[in-house]
Image (cartoon, rainbow, N blue to C red; front, side, top):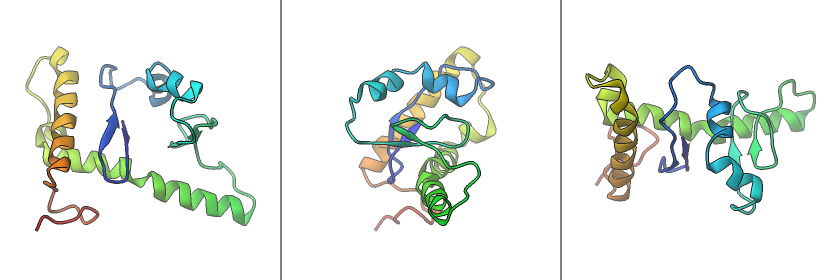
Length: 139
């Protein structure tokens, strides 16, 4: 998944089984060649150590040896935090994602995508999850 700081999902791939590595899924996605071509200009994705560092995909420095590298790592990790929060928000918004699905395995990817679309609609309507301290509360 790719999301912004508001937890709005901009890209999701749900067709691979859980044992496939994240970088394999990304490399096979439509997003990867778009970024390779420069379709998104000077925008960057932030990834964890499971991804290789590329011109458009910034990962943390494995063994920082300077204060600048340590500062970069702190900034990169804290800026990457929204995607981790997103998974928690989706699990709270749609408990079926957290507690299991009683449907055919072939239907699971479509359900995950549907939950993500509904999440985006809820955000656009300012329907926030109340117990997420990072999200604004509805007034």
